Image (cartoon, rainbow, N blue to C red):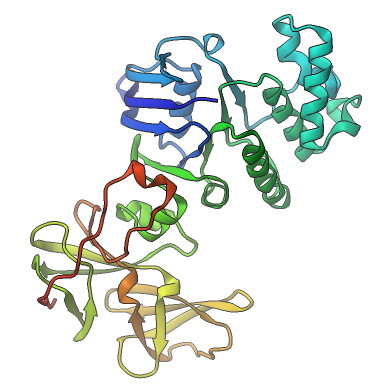
Amino acid sequence: MAEIRVENLLKQFGSFTAVRDTSFTVQDGDFFCLLGPSGCGKTTTLRMVAGLELPSSGSIRLDGEDVTFKRARERDIAMVFQLFALYPHMNVRRNIAFPLVSVGTPKPEIRRRVEEAARMLRIEHLLDKPVSGLSGGDRQRVALGRALVRQPKAFMMDEPLGALDAEFRHIMCGELRAMHDRLKATTVYVTHDQLEAMSMANVIAVMNGGVVEQLGSPQDIYDRPASIFVAEFIGSPAMNLLRFEGAVEPNASELGLGGVPVAIPASREGRASGPLALGVRPEHVALVSEGGIRGKVVGTEYLGTTQIVTVGTAYGAVKARVSSAQTLSPDELVGLQLRSAKLSLFAGDTGKVIRSTLHEAPHAASRHRKTMNSPHAPGAAHV
């Protein structure tokens, strides 16, 4: 397997720029996920790495070799597509063996590799069956098997679970990750589904508008979003954003929201003013009868042991994940207490993070990003 290094990648289709100024490194053995909404440039980026699209500018290195303008057949990469791309007139064995047959691999070696891949994917009993009669999950296993037998330097996967139903997707997520762990394979995986990305990847690149908004481990991206877009895209429910106008001095350690003091992250920059947004995850919001930021209950969503409670406040709707044993009534007046160690402060105009109280952790993906926190400083700001 191999390291993939992408630097300053640009892809234009006429006057439209699909990918711009994109740089990242996929370390040898990483399960690397390109995550983002439709049209963000993630599939175009994957296709450029695979050689199915040539970039307008920038560079791509595979295992140290410059492959920027080499075609797909000249790169030792295996691709798995969303729609399987199987040959309906061939049985499972012949579908899996096809890449080896096409390059003249000896028959005993083909047989060995096909049976090894089938065992790994638990489809030995299907080898002599036609692919037309297989379930969606089994067809995806066959498509994976065809990529596995090549023993490439890296695997490229373009939303391979998108055509499966929810139950199969959940099963295949576990199987894909287990397969990756066994093979120690370098894998680049494209998806718009944050649950797939968070459950399988050890490094995630969140893309938006053709650029990488944030690069890091799943926990880094969830706990320390680098922008409002990432805060709202990652998480179910998304991060709450309490929006307000005001000014926060560099040495401020708290601000007042509706007369309630709220500890804020330590400063990374200078004075912040204008539209601001204080971000907090629903599980870091507590409901209290007295004190806190006041609001009215506007809805509840029962989730078994927990419930999502939506509270209308002067700073927008806020969702809290609380115990389902806590009884609440519509229009009930409650207070919100925010966990001070789990807050982020964003600039409302640029959408970029200004401050974060969350402490750094030694995650594997920390090499991809800069430190985002610093010690608390004294002082206060009120808005």
